[in-house]
Image 1 (cartoon, one colour):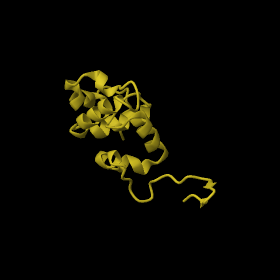
Image 2 (cartoon, rainbow, N blue to C red):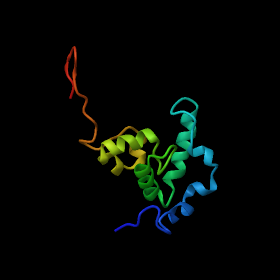
Image 3 (cartoon, one colour):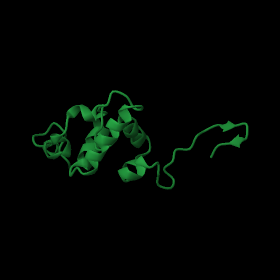
Length: 117
């Protein structure tokens, strides 16, 4: 059984994060696209080498934090909560748009050319 986040020592992983040596603003880009995209990608590169990335991502998923946590943006974490299989995908695959079989959300409805899959 894991201790709750407010238990003494439960958040010790934060002090071991690769982000500790970086500018905190890097992990809180002002937009999701445009020029801020390079900032987002730079933050994700830091996360790729982080020894506590899994704990950080778990925290971000549980607490709905703003910014980059565990290498995922708020939008990516929302998708992971809706489709838990995405949380198990290596970050470099998500960055390339590769999803595991069966994890791509199906769209409902149809188009003039027929139903969507």
